[in-house]
Length: 251
Ligand SMILES: O=C[C@H](O)COP(=O)(O)O
Image (tube, rainbow, N blue to C red; front, side, top):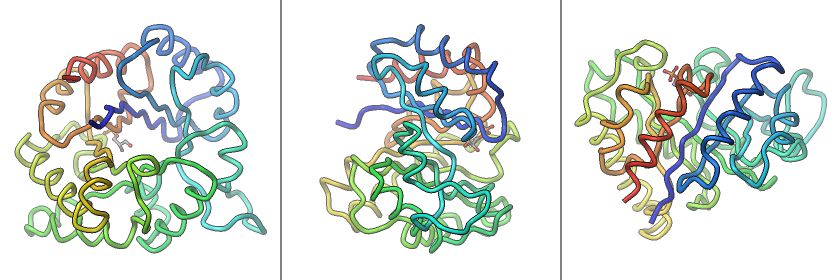
């Protein structure tokens, strides 16, 4: 049985004052039957980790480099994230793929490095609006999965987030059937490549305008094991109802 996961991606948002939101979430969701992950900006990781008591929540990074160390000004290695107390890292977010020209091959190399540092990787895949309208969504997802996800992926070290690019930060959300079709497809591809046991154990998150008012519906979709939430994860007031909806989906 896959444990459900509510993950928040703060993107380039958050100063020290916003750590209060982590305090509020951990107080409200102590002893939760689901896993919680917040990925704040790198500047807040160590401070966030020090504020979380009793493993109530995992703190993660939003990216890491594909090399162990070296002359890469401004970059952060997987080992540095782990050293700061992070337990996971988001890789291949569409904003990194688009704005930083990250290829599937680079994302895969980053994932290998993250696994070597003991981090859980949340690898993002998703199609653009043009690709959906051209009916190539599943081809795009298949190609991204094949090239971005490294060998040796298991339920312990890998989470896949399906994030249709056109739904991110736009308020547009795919229909439940559209979400289900892609999640079922991802599950089948993972089972095909990694075997039934590993393929069944890898958690699949939906991301893209998940809000308090649509979360419960999304969590009814088979093979949706949680959400990767952007804007609505920035405050405990918005993220808590989403967490509650996911808790309610635990059977
Ligand atoms: O990583 C999170 C996604 O990009 C979703 O962002 P959003 O919830 O603001 O649409």
